[in-house]
Length: 198
Image (cartoon, rainbow, N blue to C red; front, top):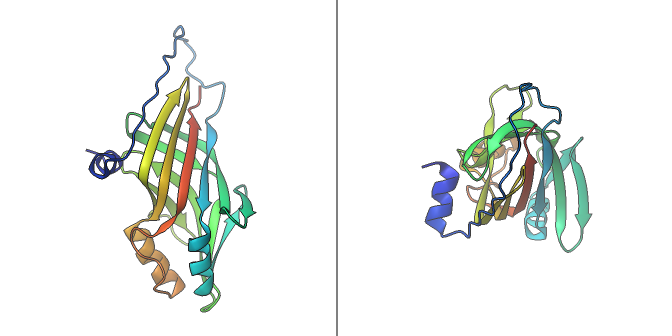
């Protein structure tokens, strides 16, 4: 059983699979006319932002990620889909995203930049590649109540809780010289939408 499917089963999360049949004749040319599309919208709640700021830690989205801020809702970061082959309701495949995140510790002057975000559906976590490395780090985990849908070609995952992965917490604390990050730390919520290339 995959990590995300096991998490959904063990937490009693609300899983909804709304599948709409897709029909169409087979096409001889397998080259996709339309690239993969969609986005991952990460809403970081005010409590997390406040706690981080008190420790001197700020997170800065990097283009083409699109940030917006609301004093009540917190910081929202939208990472655009730029590739991947995944079946989210089937719990397999990967979705890749453009943009990045810069984590900066103002107290120590240390920082780390993550790019090449990838959602491994089978493993149930987001990885990202830190600057100066080619090895992806498990960084964030969808958790809480998860709702999975597929309508036509578009698949979606909405997670009521988005948490720091244990490996990601250890990596961030080491790189930034802090003890702020912890495994399972709640940062906000996730809304992912993905349409495969076709």
